[in-house]
Length: 415
Image (cartoon, rainbow, N blue to C red; front, side, top):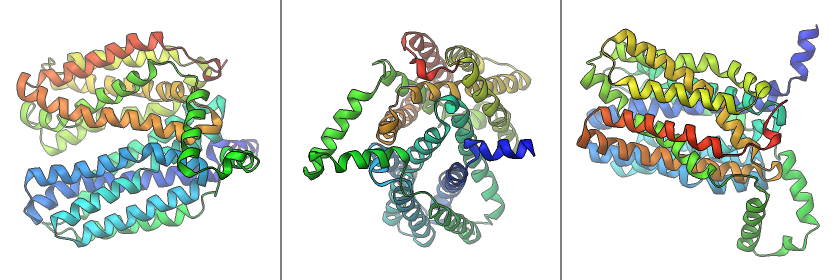
């Protein structure tokens, strides 16, 4: 009975948080299945598209997602979770239907751009909502739970959808994804209309003369307030970019390295990914709890050190056993980095402007994921397969040094 009472009192397992995590998992499942498994092969074999067209189609999704993250954060603060998320998941639902029913390249690109616009509210809504519920004492723990939902969806989607894809027949797979998005729309209907922060801000605005000001003037004034209220080191912005840039460098060349250099089969490559991903998922929640109890800095130092060492040594390993150990170490390193890094960012965000600031921060991080793959391909072509891994590890070493000069606000530390 005591444990049941503690469960009910635990804000991290409130219906609101569970709804956000369900939406996160299913949407990332659908995105992973579409972008990694279905679209590249479907467009190549089923529609006869060139690699150039396929590249632009996938790029349309990510650009649409990243461009809208900052304004979406402002919309969350003003309109609340239900309106923002419901609009996004409805756009995502329509995009999946469009992709499933069209055979024209232009409509495929439009569908992917719409997918990006639709998923843009996902991270700002989920991070804003969950960190608001978690409060000061649970930032790292809740971020671990969020990333566990994200990694599970991203990892499971591309693998599970293979069981529903026949010999160039994608009807069953598309039907499954449409069913998944139907569930997401229904869950989004149960989200609260307004956050506590936005309700307080709305009451204040009602008593303010600025309420009658033109829209652009109000947005400008709002962003000025956000800038003044942030207690963040100027070094945080290049550090946020560098953190995702290091990850973005690895995104396009991991498969290339596994297939062309290591000569791994599809099963061996899957096991390779599981070795790192499963370790990260398993370790995230315990690490998050330790960060909340012990503080942010020790975990940042440990995580950047382990991850940088694993990447710098990765392409020089001579046996598969050592490679699996390095992949597992990389997974452990990121299990240290994810909760501590996001707790550091969350500690600098004013509660009353949580949506707008998270949206702005996620836009900066998204730029790293856009630039990283571009740089990675050039490094691979010009300097060989060692270069991207060395660059990624070098960036993490730079972050290890840089974070020493970023002050951690007292409210970001749990004593």
